[in-house]
Structure formats: structure tokens, C-alpha cells
Image (cartoon, rainbow, N blue to C red; front, top):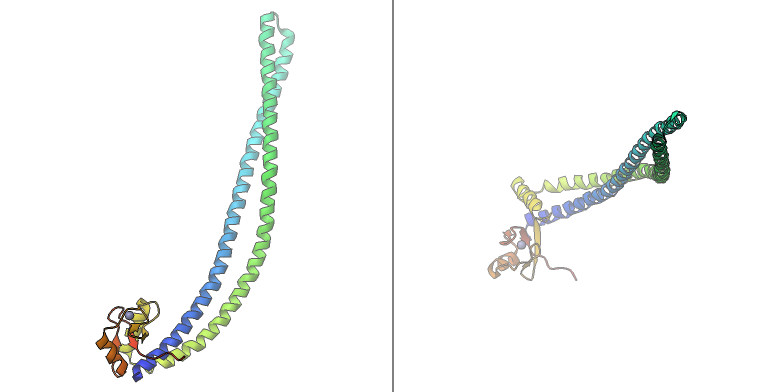
Length: 237
Ligand SMILES: [Zn+2]
């Protein structure tokens, strides 16, 4: 391996370690984000329950008002019965009273059904609110734990970053630009080993002539398939 290649391989080793640190941070944050969105969903569910309860209560009040009117109507009709002259009038009035009474009964049944539903929804909402309260408390604790963990990881990252910056100084800026671009476009791997003539980045065979040049180790080569920079180093067994 020539000097530049060796320095690039070392740089990439550090960069891959930093990538791993970034992944750890991302993973910690993602777990927390999932819990935050689960909590938000529960809050939405509670709001839906509360608004259903409100709608039902409004419906109940309307029915109660209607019932008050109907009861008054029954009383008014009943008192009119005294003044009725003909039996035809009496029959008509009796029918009106019966209809009004039936309406009152129907309203009562509707009100009871609504009250039962409200009770059921209120129980569910209260359970959800209790769970939410506990989850909020746990989330606050987790946020702190994750924050501390990320701080700790970041401290380690800073050390690695310093090491990286020092390592990068051993390479010229054109080489670093090429390396950064490749890492960006080739999934974090800018320079790869070639084993048995096969590029370990894209797993394509290198043309034999180029492989021979690479084996001599004095010249830098790029993979004709994936454009990554290449080196050759037998694996220790
Ligand atoms: Zn390749």
C-alpha cells in the first residue's frame, strides 16, 4: 500500500466509527420519538372521547327540554278534557294525550340509552387519562435518560472527531474531497479492499491487468464498476 492509501484507510476506519456513533444517537432518538408519537395518539383518542361525550350530553339536554314541553302538553290537554262537549272531540283529545305520553316514554328511553353510552365512554376516557398520566411521567424520565446517554455518546464522538481531523491533515485537500464525495455517494465506503480480484465494495471482478497493477501496490486505482478507491491487503487468518 502506498502512503496516501494507508492514510485514507485509517481515516475511513475513524469515519466508520463516527458513523456508528451517529447511528447509536439516531436509534436512541428514534425510540424516544416513537414513544412521543404514541402519547400524542393517546391524547387524540382522549379528545375524541371527550368530544363524543359532549355531543351526547348536548343531545340529552335537547331531549330533556322536549320532554318538559311534552309533559306540559299532556297536562294542558288533560285539563281541556273537562270542557269537551262531543264524544268526537273527546276521542280526538284522548288520542292526542296518548300520542304525547308515548312520545314522553320514547324520549325517556333515548335519554337512558344516551346516559349509558356516556357512562361507558367516560369510563374509557378516564382509563385512557390515567394511562396517559403514567406514560407522560415515564416519558419525562426516558427523555432525561436518553438525553444523558446522547450527551455521553457525543463526548465519545468529540474525541473521535478530533482524531479524525488530525488524520485528515495527512492527506491533501483534493484527495479528501474525492474521498468525502465517494463516501457520500457510496454508502460510507470510499476506499475498499480487493480480495481475489473482487472489489469488496461492489463485488465485481477487477480486470486482470488492473488487478496486477493493484497487487504491485505502487499506484492508486479506482474500481471501474463502483468508482471506489481500491487497495489490496490479504486478510489475517
Ligand atoms: Zn467496486
